[in-house]
Length: 357
Ligand code: BGC
Image (spheres, rainbow, N blue to C red):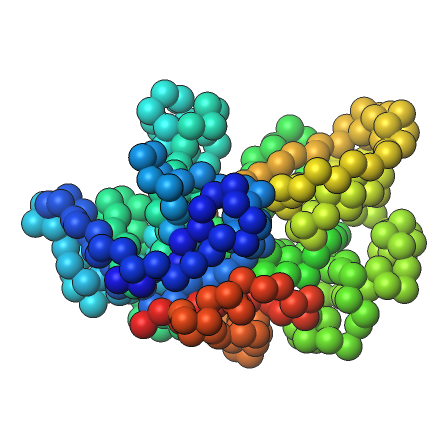
């Protein structure tokens, strides 16, 4: 079968390889890949900044935003049949920590987890992949066309779930939110916060009157471009911020955001920044404000199975409430053979997919 594979650590190493279709045992499921989403993590792995091959192998099949159809079911597996649409979760547990053993590998303590298409486990940018059924989420046919968004959706569900969990430390009824970044994570997060009754401001670099600002406006949120005003000016305009979600991919924004959080507010950091950028920050002021304002800054990565389940319900709600928005996020659909074009990054792009079968 054809698969897009990289040599981890090597710059721009993605190639289309011919590799064997995975063998499945009686407890596994073989899935035919329909499409895979491309995100900035895939591009970082391709650039050699991130990612590890499975043990004993020198290449890694890319891809963690999956959507496929069950092709073959191992004889001990129940609950799946040929033709069922599925999305695969990303992370697999380590063998040593309490969080992983209780089904929460998204908060693994040892760091010895594996991640499909990223760390020590082959991904879904191949004609087939196999998995343990516990890591496959069945998807209803009505959501088939949108389901490649379920993985990023699970990440934004976790942001909100964890924010509420953390804020049980005090009375918290978030009304005003800011999201930094208008990529797929920023836009899905904006939809989720609007759906949860918040006033949502999306801050991004691109000047307004582009597709991203149009989509932000069409869900009833406000788009603010940092081409015309700084983050500080934007925040002065917006006022009290109960929740800030940083999803711009730029680590300096994470520190800028810390200076703009209101008392008791929460800043959630989601950008995976594999580079080596350094920046000078107003550490005394930031520290003092965080302390005196009882503010929280937390990082979140990956997602729990409950976030995938919540994500499916949210995608359905979004599709009913804003029927044109999710389809409009698919800005480039690229055939498998043109994988190199899919891995390039264009600033106005939202979600690129690789169409596999
Ligand atoms: C994925 C996560 C993963 C993270 C770190 C992100 O792009 O969405 O599932 O945990 O990269 O590898």
